[in-house]
Image 1: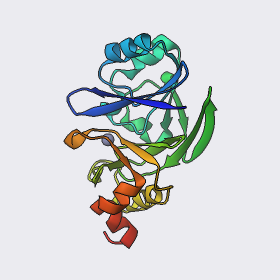
Image 2: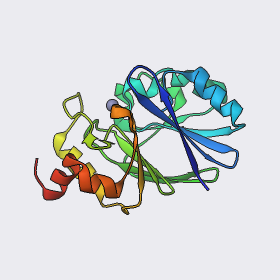
Image 3: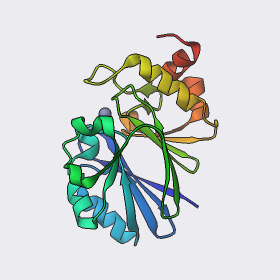
Image 4: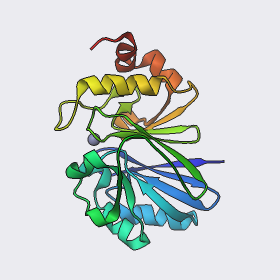
Length: 201
Ligand SMILES: [Zn+2]
């Protein structure tokens, strides 16, 4: 059974996710407050096995290198987002495009979902999909930033919409107080997803 804990950190409503199975855990987009992250790991008696980033923007990676160095871990980041991130290369595993791999008991599928940035990915673990800044409940990420691509964003939203409807989505920010949704809900209510499925821009 996979558990997901949301840590709301920093001044931009960033969501860091602590994914656990038994006493093994992964972090997704750890940023801003390494003390709180460490404290949560200690309180829950969790062993940190791995760290993954949805993309390289500073608000998703800020200060993460201190955590990585302390735990002697390297974090997974798509190669095309390395130039955006200020993380030192020695704390990164870089890769390109879709990937499937295991970390301890976790089966991880990386879905390349460019648009917000060239190296944006969604991270699928069990029935959960961590969407970073590609999709928020009722919205999508900005596509007016360096390395953004509005056309690729449409394809990426379609890709998310093609997943099983019961897939639980967790976004990179809790804009509007909410970071959790489902593929079913977004297909029904998210105007950007609906436009993407209709092939409009
Ligand atoms: Zn971003």
